[in-house]
Length: 127
Image (cartoon, rainbow, N blue to C red; front, side):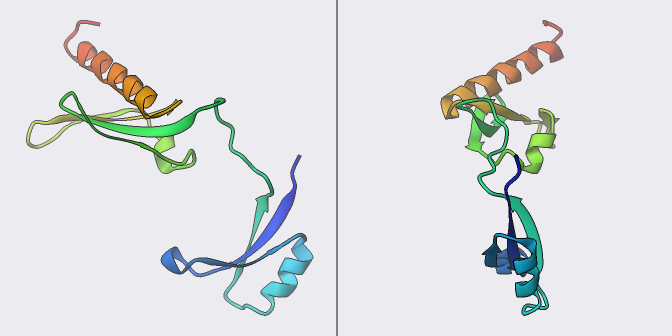
């Protein structure tokens, strides 16, 4: 069930800011008439993205069998739309990026390493 609110915003990037939050579009439009460069954004109050219970979204990067980083990222990050990504760099380093839902950093690291070694086994013709 949707419970919309209306944000009046202005600016871009580091200058982006919320001028006000309104319960109806009509009130937001009235306020907008006072701020010529503003925009009205509709959002759902109390919205929480769908996600597996107890899980967060993670991105891990592995370079030559070593976890370089494993960070929680937002579930609507552009990374979520990507599949796992493998690459051999100019210097010959092999690296991969892994995106997954996990309970915590240790869980995400385990998932990423499992995928890394599965990829390496497939490359070697073992799996």
